[in-house]
Image (tube, rainbow, N blue to C red):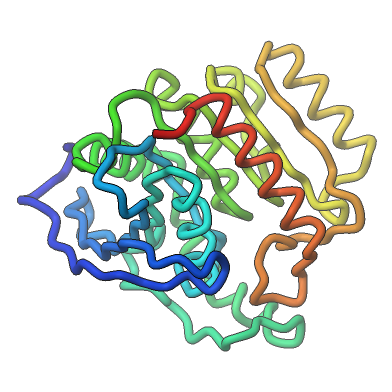
Length: 267
C-alpha cells in the first residue's frame, strides 16, 4: 500500500438507515496515506459474505449524514461501500461547518471556503490516494475478489473518472453524477476500460455540449451512457441541499444499480 504506515484503525458500529430501515454494519477508519491519515466510512451487508467493493467519492461538502445514507442504501443492494474524506490533508471531515440543510443563500460562501482545497487536490494526489483506497478495499475480508466499482458526485465525479483512467485493470464500472467529467482531455478518458455512466444536470450541460462530449466518448470507444437528467440542477442527488430533485435521485439509483449489477454482480 503506497505510503501506508501500519494498519488502519477503525470503530465498528451498527446503524439504522433512515432510507431502508435496515440495520447496517458500519466502520469508520483512519487509513494511513502518503500525506497523513484519511478518515473514511464504510457500510456493508450484515451477512458474513464477501461482496463487491465500491469506492464512493463525495461532493465537495464531503462525508456527512446524506452520504452515509447513500452508502448504506447502496450497501443494502449487496456491496461494500467506502466513502473517503477526499480533503483529509487539511483535516477531518467536515472541514467547514455545515448546516443540516445547505440552502442557496449559504452555498456560495461554503463553496468559497472549500475552493482552496479543491484547487490543491491535483490529479497526482487523486492518483496517489486512489491507489491506497483501492488497495484498502482489496484487503477487507468483507470484500470479494475482482474488480470494483467507483461512483462520484460533483467534484467526486471527476475523481471517479480519473481513478478509472489511472487504474483501468482494477475497475469494472464507473458512474459520475453532476460531475465536471469533461474537465480532462478526452485522451485521459480514453484510458478507461470500465463501463461508464455519466448523469449530467440539465443546469450544467446544454444538449449541444452533451453531443460534443458524447462524440468524443464515441471516438474514445468507451462503453458508456451519457445523458442529461431532465429538469435538474447541479447537486440534484443531494437531499440536504436546495438543488435536490427526487425524480433525479431516483433516476440516479435506477442507472447506478443497473450498471453495478451488470458489471459487478452481487454476492
